[in-house]
Length: 295
Ligand SMILES: C[S@@+](CC[C@H](N)C(=O)[O-])C[C@H]1O[C@@H](n2cnc3c(N)ncnc32)[C@H](O)[C@@H]1O
Image 1 (cartoon, rainbow, N blue to C red):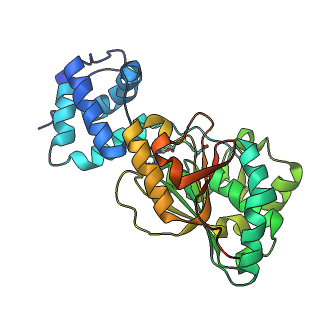
Image 2 (spheres, helix red, strand yellow):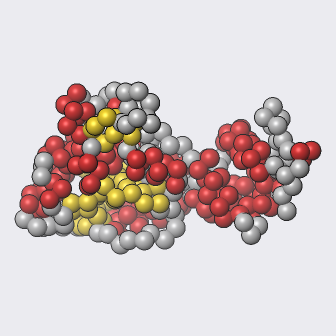
Image 3 (cartoon, rainbow, N blue to C red):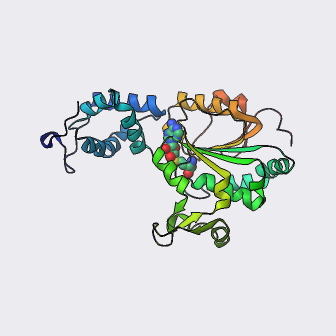
């Protein structure tokens, strides 16, 4: 039971100590919940980010927090803990060589197929606050202005409900849209609204209508089967251990169309063991082995 009485509360200035045993217990729970591998170097980050959760719950030490996480009401807190520990850094057209490949080689044949009634599906897995899937939507609309009239969809998912709420709203402060061209801002955004900080922009109805957001834990069951023509899973698995990464690459191969494309983050690599499943196509760009999907 959690005491909320004043004497057991930790204050902002007190940093609860994290013993090796509690850190190991927390790491196990985090890994089970999300696949995230908390290495010893993350101990300071865990103390500062979860210290706030301890204060919010009125708990005085990490041992009590671990018991709370494992207790009856722990499921909700496990979600909050993962939200507190995940890194959500992202930006529009991040790693722009991927968008060049999409624009020049990957999307044109898929859109040609869509014009003839073919279904086209893209998945932004670990989409954070939405800049990645909206960059995909803008790229699609630049290639095919009438894309919303065809069977083309972008699925965008993340484990963190807070980033999905932000992504769905699609409202970004001026610094987030600064790198977009004037033409992109004019065509694909509108004013952010009275509640948003001055100069904020909201993604326009066109790109928004191409994207469906959902909360999905990549290491849990997936509530869809695909197939996907393109998967972007960038700067997500860097936090997973190699066994978890390997399982994920295999699962991506299962839900990709033959010849489907997988884009991963700049510091990520496919494990050697999944080599036969994918062919390297460019920088951190892979294609599922097998015949290309017919257009
Ligand atoms: C650094 S952001 C990357 C965002 C975007 N893909 C990019 O490259 O800009 C990593 C995202 O992965 C999400 N994530 C971490 N573990 C996850 C899991 N097990 N399932 C789904 N998403 C996860 C985090 O919540 C975070 O939003």
